[in-house]
Image (cartoon, rainbow over all chains, first blue to last red; front, top):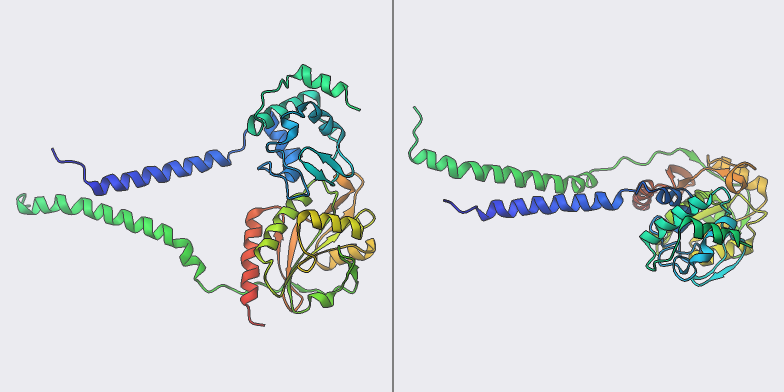
Length: 140
Length: 212
């Protein structure tokens, strides 16, 4: 029996690699249909970036943000109340106005936090609906 | 009658080689297709209108900015406001790509007009530009009397208006306007779309090479 020709083996591997690269980029570009993802794309991504990196010193990053780690309890009130004027947080000092997203329910914010934590948060904080509602009740 | 001896053996050897050859020709053709397109002679960009703004505005460094500053320069103009919560952040991140692509390019400028001059004073624009880490020598962010800025938007063919029901209180076009060295509008590009801004960057390069 003849052994497979190395020429064809190389071509096959090339095709396989090309297919894998295409599939990889399609998966990367696919927007998740999770509720939190849709809220992020609609309400947050314009400033904080689809990649979560923000924009230089103008808009703060959400990727690895303090508010997805130790400061997670402050997150719901920041979203609900917005920010006006200079704001110094653990991620630096920023001076853009963030709208108050009063239309977002506790469940919306919970879904957003689940999405953000899954994507960029490392610490496993409790962000159940009950906990988020409690944090919202203590907003200034 | 077909001979199946020596010629049959040759056919077996020859057929896979032909398939391989066709495969590689297809791959090479596909890979070289975009390069082939770019080397073709391009049509000149259309001349849409000639612009001449009769007003003088102030930029983020408090310097007066009038049409004379742009004479002989290629530039991109747009309209925004710093507290805009919707399309402006995307427009600014895309304009930043244009800025970075031509930051060392002589004869090229950017011009962003605020449509909220009550809030966007020289100081606010200065802080905005500083945080964006851009230089006023290349990218002018200007403010001035509201009616003059709105009239200027019309001259550029871009819409801007107050709207209390809109997020942030204003509505405006998200397009970038490309103007050549003679003050002629040569194209409009959606400032919220990466592909459109890629096209803008290519068109700026094309205009830079265009003989005046």
